[in-house]
Length: 81
Image (cartoon, helix red, strand yellow):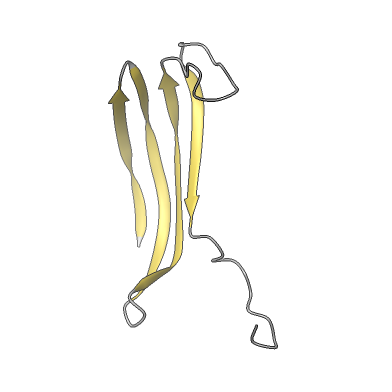
């Protein structure tokens, strides 16, 4: 399946708006995703306060975030371990 769309989030004077792009493969027999890739790209506003080390101002700033399933790109070893 493919993901594509727009989003808008707001909380406590901070905003993040942008677009989502991604793809996923779901194994119905195993009842789980075997591939999941999602990227958000947009603009955030509002200060970060003391939430992290960046201390970025409140003005608009580009922000991108990616989401994957941990280990999905790893190849099983030949010994089966």
